[in-house]
Length: 60
Image (cartoon, rainbow, N blue to C red):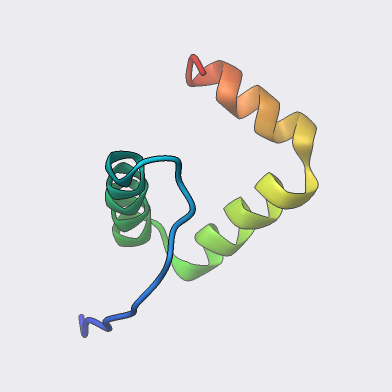
């Protein structure tokens, strides 16, 4: 699979948290399809009940 490189900015209170977010996003991008990521983003933005349920299931 071809790789593409991007320059992005991540909002976080510390550089360590920004690094952690970037690593997590990289894992999600490598394990989920574009369609799955789009649906996940939609749920996070528009379906707070599902997002809260997912966080609870993850122990967050």
